[in-house]
Length: 297
Image (cartoon, rainbow, N blue to C red):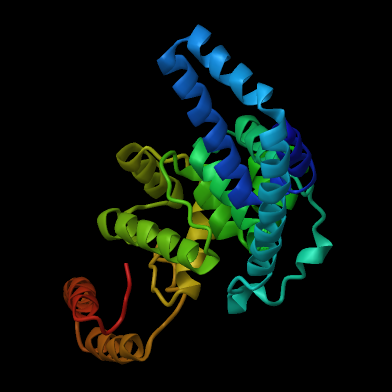
C-alpha cells in the first residue's frame, strides 16, 4: 500500500512532467493490465488484493523506491538541461514560450492542433514532438504556436520555420525527428527526391507543377507551401528553375560561365539555332549537376 501511495504522489509531482518517466510509467501500466487480462479478471484481482494486504512490507519498500525515483528524476532533469542545442537554436530563447510542464497536456495541445488542421501526425510522432519540446527550443516554439488559433493553415505556416510547417501540412506521410537539424535534412531529402522527378522548369505555371506533385505523391501542396519549400531548398544550396522562364534563385559560378557562352552563341545564330543552343545549354547543365558541380533542378 505504501508503494502504491508513494508512486501516485511521485507521479503527480514529478513523473507526469518528465517525458521519459511519463512514457515508462504509461507503458508499465499498460503492461500490468495486459498481465491481468491474460491471467483472468478474478486472478488479477487476487494478485492486487495480495499486494495491498502486505502493507507493512510495501511501506518500507515504497519509501526506498520512492527515494530512488526522486534521485533518478533529478538526474534526468539535469540531463535534459544538458541536451545538445543546435547552433540554429541558440538564438531562440525557450523561456519566452510558456507551456504546461505536464507531458500529457503538451501532447493534448499537439493532438488538438493536429485534429483541427489535419496534419496526419501519428501518436508516436506527437509524443516525440512533445518530448523534444523539453530540450529543443525550436520544437518548444512549435508546440507553443500550436496552442494558438489561426484563420487558415497558411497563416500558421508564415514563420521562420515555414519549411517545417509546410512539410507538416502538405505531406500525408512524414518523418519526425526530435533533433531539429536532422529534421531539416529529412525535409531536404524529401523535397529533393520530388524535384528530381517533377522538375518545375518543365511546366508552364507553378500551379501546374504543384498539381502534378500532388497527383504523383498524394501531397496537399498549394502555391504558398510550394514556394516555402523552394525557398528552403535555395537556402540549402540548390538551384531551382521555376516555370514561366523565371530566373534561377541562386546562380553558381559554373552557371555564369554557361550563360556567357550561351549569349555568344545567340549573337552568331538565327532564332532556330538559338532555340537549339538553349536546349543544349540545359542539357549540359543537367550533366554538370550529375557530376555534383552544381545541385539544381
